[in-house]
Length: 608
Image (cartoon, rainbow, N blue to C red; front, top):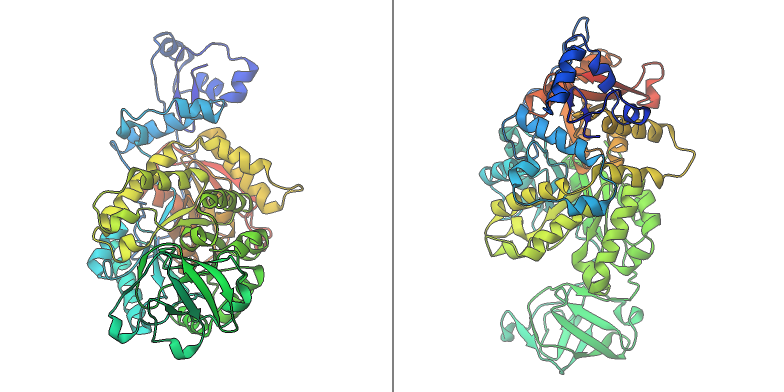
């Protein structure tokens, strides 16, 4: 049967009449269409006989239309850049047709075999990028002018790396991001990335210059004795982790500067270890040190981290990326250091073997996860990193926790205007795996082409998204849920399933705490989720979740005036070019009887 029902638009091609029972189940509404007062059965039969495609807009429901709640001043409709539009409504219908066709594909293999690169504009026409982009802010991107360009290109969340810089510098960057967001008319999240319990080398001996080369085969004494902090030499290296000799073992490895220098341990003393260099490498001051397979006993958060987290609270930041999380109690320690106040999301960065071993416990405690592949690729064998990535993303998808894929995604663009093919594939595969966000580090912080990097990442995310079989991902998440389901999961599943069944153009949810928005995002809808909220922090935090587009409104006079808030979300969709008259929208909200229990009602609305 070549007939698809897509919300308010019907497409016909050689449709058998009368419809059998199976057809009525597959295409609800087609039979009703034949009896529609605006299109006679005679005309419908003629259209079918002529093998022509037709679209008939449904009339809006009768009755008084409620005026939507005003969208908060200064916030304009947000588009995640990377959207390729053909011509407004035309592109919109192309997208709907594409989604409807994919609902009938039997398998991922069949879907992948049908992918076509001959007409990219057609393949992505009308599509809205559903995944977020996180950009690290540094010297290359710190100006308000550049930040505005990055936001327009697709940046959704700005990351501040607290391994570098002073509080004064970071306060200036925060002010610049907020000014740029105001100028661009966008909601942009702000994240603090903690330094974490890092291990670093000391300083090169003054008479040896700024850098020394450790030669392959040479023997080096790695000491924790503080008197050698400024005396690093070709045969001596200071490391600031006092317990290093206690946690390493004979034959173990020490990696310096992201594995640039690799050393093998052959002797262990009280405050030193003797190593053989396995390769030659230049090393300068304060380089990071990794101890693969060793269980490091550093505290989850250092005194510097505690001061940084207090700064995050003072600056009203939206989220914290907590480095080197090894166990669930580390997340609780971060929350305690943040202190009381409006909730700040805590995202666990998994960067070592111990974090991988305890991942499921960490996942239950954290608000989100970052697959931080830089240190992870040193702490564990590099050929295992992609397995960790897929496993962590899958577990986050099952629990509905936002997950970020990070590190070296477009690394070559730090120096080059074009990425490698492998890097582009890396970004695309992260999206296909199920990542909610992808992140740029040095590419935007210190690179020569920060704007190019964001533009290419946005385009790649969109292409990857359009290559996914959407309904299959929904079914996969649904089938992994334990029974009995919670009430919020039942509502979220119903909303997303309804969106697929009727070909909805969007889901509009009232989500003042963010819980309902994230619950719906968990089930991976094919369409945008417009999450209506009057809480600015909640709106920015929702940017972490795939497909969620926050709609910030004024505080309603009556919180039970659900219709005006739903209409605010619909108006937002129309103004941003995502909704058109006649489209179907799935609305999710409370029935008003017990609003403290959250959303418990799903209904279908025709866009006026």
